[in-house]
Length: 410
Image: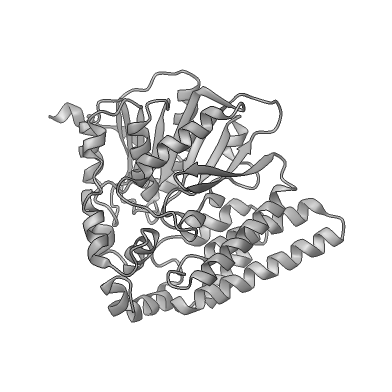
């Protein structure tokens, strides 16, 4: 049996934690996947999954059953002549198939099967979407990076464009909402990508490494610049959770971007907390993403090189970082240290008491929307408004307090 030692030895503890704390014991994956569906059945889907998954082995069969039920509803709606209703169900099915992939780290056939069902459902939704959705495969060495290119309704462009990635467990399908998407509503095109090690890229053998996203940045920027729908002068980028690390790598080496906004940051050099102290599921997932499922020692050597500091010393792209002050996966003190080193303007917003997923704190409920902050900040960049150094704390009462920027505390 391969995988990380703690995963092998503590599998029983993960199962017991799921039984007592539900499937969202380590992160709110139901919200990640099903909130963008925005229909009246999403809550029922969440309840069925939350009640049905009592251990890791339950995850795929329970989520599969809910995805198949959504597909049946989609076909019934199509047969009844209701394409928009069908589209909502196809979108939900795609999110569920993507969610089902989470713990599939050893069964290559199953990973391909689930990913194929996810793609088919998403493309069925795209055929009914109110905006244009294009399947994209960005050339990357001798492989490709899978992406969905979303274009806002109305007009032919060129549009301001955001390059977007999620985290370890957030494939490209969760990055654009079915309705009311904040990027599309502001006239942005969105290139939603599975970078090296993420989603379909990992299924197809494109693995993450300490430099893979730097290399991917070259390929992604070249693709964006070649598209007539993209305004080269209004390119921005965003990433969430581990995507905060990867997108910062891209922004630090691609000065074409007008701004880089990241949230739920994972900046600790060597990522020791998330891989050695947090739930062993994180390391298990990342070892699979790296193609090192059978070699924990090689994985540890690779992760020891995860360090933004050498890149940040020369970064020119304005940078925004939004996260929780009580992040249990990556010490929040590293945000200030990274901003201190970065010569570009940097805007920091920290939520008092906020854990990694920005839960369990009234600051996130009573203060400004952390997702909304990233959207508005990047919108300001494409509008040509200058970026400034900021350091703000959102208190438990929802008040925003200005603090000295880390560079002022040298």
